[in-house]
Length: 410
Image 1 (tube, rainbow, N blue to C red):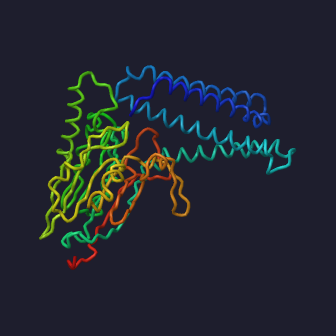
Image 2: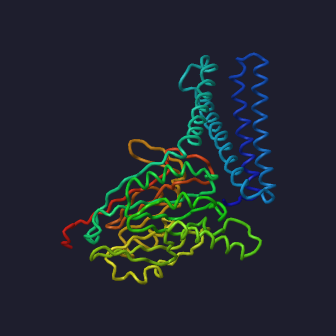
Image 3: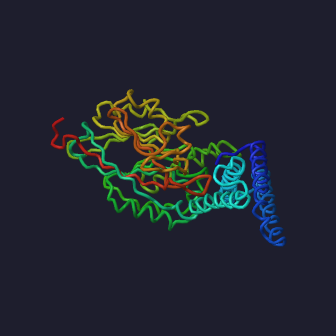
């Protein structure tokens, strides 16, 4: 996980304090209806929680470098969850009750003195329970998203090719809960895939996060092969290392893990799969994104041996490469990416999906098409930072590729 400056953390704590002061101001309009002793207890608990949360955030930041990395990730994620589940409901509570009180568009002024605070309180509790659901239930509700795609140049021998696409495992966030991931492994194997593709961010930062996971992922079965590329978190760029050699050893251990679970890791290179008289190329680039993300990827190098291939599948962790270097610039019909997580939060209304992440990434979740070129952005199987998912379930993508002319009349 990337580290934020002390200044940023202090600004966050100030924002929490300001919102809590406003929330407490409106809370008093509700607690005035209670007995003095109960009112005092509620007020005391409110400020004990606020002061405790702000203190914990500041102490964690100041002591972060002294904390064991294994505990650090758990503490940071817990703090994310606690902050979000407290901060967002209070913001909504303050906004709703302020609008209702000052605009007074719903009730008569006399009635508002009682009804408006209660509506405001409900508006705060509702998002709180939604966030709790996102943290304790939705985070591991794995979902298979199914798509059938037709291509003119897919070799007939690969007609009805079944592909599983997964991304962004962030295994350090699972804290060695192998049974949870086994559920996803079973869902994948039950589709009987021909190919399994993983598009990066295996870990949060460290190779030690992979301890014990080999026996889980070695169970993945694919008829034709399993392939992977690296994501931005797989290079160790978000951690401080004693020496450059330590960082290199960490990186090499991550690459070795792919060999141990029988995945072919593509590092700006390609591999050819043959079936009967047909061939397809699997092309994999290292991570490439807009700054501050580093650009390790070299698409031209990866494509060097594929010029004669009639059909290519590109694995690129960051979907920005598709817009920058693939569509209308190559003949790659299918690109698979991840990286965005769909921000792990979205609002769905009648099939339409919206998330704030759309303002950062043009392509951020699901299937996209420009002319005859497709991009699938996997929403991620794991999580990072906020330990929950809201309207953005962890994804296993199932793709069935069809030859537009299955009899070979290309």
